[in-house]
Length: 609
Image (cartoon, rainbow, N blue to C red):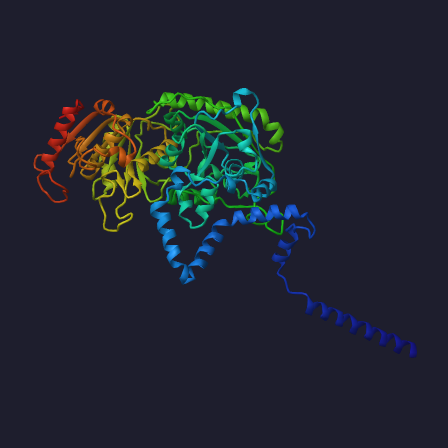
């Protein structure tokens, strides 16, 4: 019995101790949901001990990845100190009205581009560039250059490393070449962040910026990440899908400035982030295309690593990036290149890209899942054109503007020929939908595409409705906005944007005849309808009444021989004698139209009654 009591007491003691242990564990262990527990199990955390150099590399890349929110937060913090307000007001005035750094690249700092922190940034991946073999790959600093960078990737970190810093040794490999990486103009609206970009030599991708830099003299160079937002959606590890076949704008830019074209293929650019599956037909793909059509840019759904882990976060993975700089393609300068000239240069450009891929793919793309692809992609934008409707597209160069386009049913997407194009500019009331609806039948009869830009009222001044009519308003060049729309349209469908027909009625007529003075080489013909005010070809009267100071206003002179070669139609209703909505002197619309017709006829222009 005593032995049984001892056994029973021992059992109770064991049970009490076991219960005490379990309660102790329960009190010290947090209750974690099963989902979170599984997530923790899948996260690969950074070990406690890693070399200091690697920590610095990770820190620099992490800070760059969140540079925009950090810059905004810092600016708001500075705004919380009233003594700093006068300085901040001066800074904002400088940014918005004075500083033209994003348009000419004059703020680039060799000192900033050579800072040690960029070495950490580059060594993180690591990122480097490789110069193509042979003397033909040399880039003598006696001419301008346009580098085309492929692929876009999610962010284009390889482009930043190679062309926006000197940590890869670009200046030593290509002495005398001054590179400027180009990005969206909206990035320069972010306080403080913009100043970092400018110090890195990064500029706006606007046409004005490209022209200003390429005209700056021998050795000037710009780098355009050609694929843009569309290509970023195709950035999956192991792939190289390029959006290139319908991108002709950068080639035209190179030809107009006599700049050698240099293809650059960056192996590994698509590998530094993982992107959610977004093949055509998936919900994610549909949402991304909808977002892009509304805002002009898109948001890839991606992930990388974190600051303290290797597989969850928004930092890029440590994967090698090697940008191979190809052989330059020499172009013959032409102010207004024909479509045949542009496509001939494009053919050489694509051949050089394919040569780079085939030469180095087994060295730097061993884990590829498929070969290089450059399909003439029937994307959602093109599919919208197949519907027979007139969809609107946000202008990717400046989302304040948009355009709609109509393609005649006789022209198929697979057709190799390019459609002629009519650009029809709205009047003051901006009834773009009604305008293009009236032109549909004409489009079908003539087999011509129609594009109608929308220049919204009140862009800067809420009461202003006339902004586009004089072509220039504050810092907005509406002719350059139109050119950006044309380049975008050429990427959607095969339309001939090198030379086109232009029509404008009322306010659109004002824009049309002023556009004729500035860009006659781009016009096959122009129809000017009932302009409310006119710019006469008088060389003793300033713009917009005359053209005496046109070189000061627009930075270019008038090519009168080219103006004379354009077929011009001036039209107005004989009863259009109301004087409302008219500005300046000159009588009725009938009087002004007759005067403009007489002036152009006197110049020797081909004017039509």
